[in-house]
Image 1 (cartoon, rainbow, N blue to C red):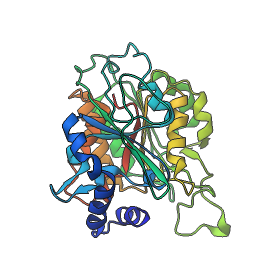
Image 2 (image 1 turned 180 degrees about the vertical axis):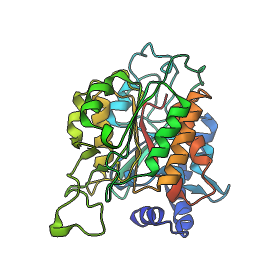
Image 3 (image 1 turned 90 degrees about the vertical axis):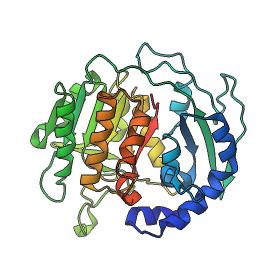
Length: 344
């Protein structure tokens, strides 16, 4: 699994062999039962090193298809698993039934039976099947709050992220977009609870010793502290996000480098980060598993928002189709963006 992740991150074309092997270990044992239930999406709960690569890239060698070509895929934390079983909220996005093949962490209900969760090399994988019907397009505004390229100087410059927020403005002219010196912590903390979508196209550091954004860090001083997001006037400690009050927020998108890069050997950081945003009230998090290509990420996120805002698709289906639009390329370009939490 470690070798496979490295191949995805480096653009190594030999990933296909390992991709098929992992599919045979993780998916093929239950593939027939999955097909029989005809789910409209897969929800994955994994531990340890299974959290460190996107299941979307696993390839069925018999069909010559990625798992993503067969199903929309998202991931669940302990908190989002429970929220899916809670009473539906008045939001028009939150009314669909769930049928699950297996549930983890003591969650029981809705006629679910625990059938398939198994260990592989000390890690635990649970697969959930979700059936949903797509809902009509939401008639209200989308209220996107976007931040991009807050420090347009090296080593922090992220010019490609500005294409992401430009596309957001075209899709939703009522969006509030801040870039360069305007993308401040003060604005973020004041405005974040007023919007349904938060798009943070900035650096995030989730390595235990901090992040070096250059080739070398002089005197071993990192450019960013651990577990922070970069704004024009400073770094925002991720732990403070739980205090933002995001009960009306459908999605927090962190699309720049290293936003979901694991900090611990067991890969807990990505779920820990998602858990914090969920505690703040956000329904879901979209983040990246490794350093991303600016142009490819802009293409995926632009199509993602278009499919939500113009076609009325759910978050998970929109991300699937946006990724498939780039799937002719190596998974390095399209697979690192993952959806964690409520897919609706």
